[in-house]
Length: 220
Image (cartoon, one colour):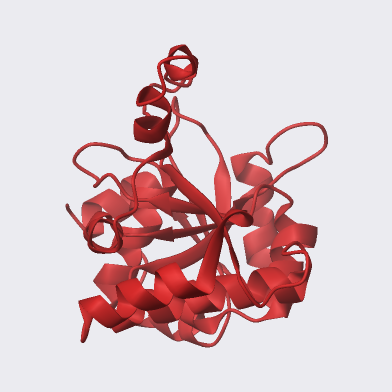
């Protein structure tokens, strides 16, 4: 069993947790960092050590306050493209919303540029607690789309038990903002297996969490 206080300490200090979903689902492991501790070195670590798509994720309420739709909703609203909206093999609709860059980025893809976009998104989410209008204005002034950082939105653990939902709920459980950056861990030719990811976590001193543990300790 994991200790939430220890996880919070690691996340605030800029260390990741490794999060496996479930046997029979994606069966994948994501490397997850807290959005409030992101630097360009975080992005470099995700790029080199994880290897999957680097995404920013937040909660459903936060997205609603900012007016962020799911990508599936956008595509369904375009008749000529709506046929492309299909469920993945694991059954759940994706958590993707918009892809953005901060307006002060150069190309948007470098470690520094993506770190700027991600840390700025975190500050927007943080501002929502005290001033929704200021947060919305900052978001629409300081970002543009399309960009190089996909925003994922939690659909809630009661509706979807993916890495987005579990990581956002984990942040809430440890008392941090619903703000994470994550990427799938890749192996040779395919996703990194659970046992290999466990060895990686042990070697580096990272917490390894399984979805079944997360659900048990932090119920929806």
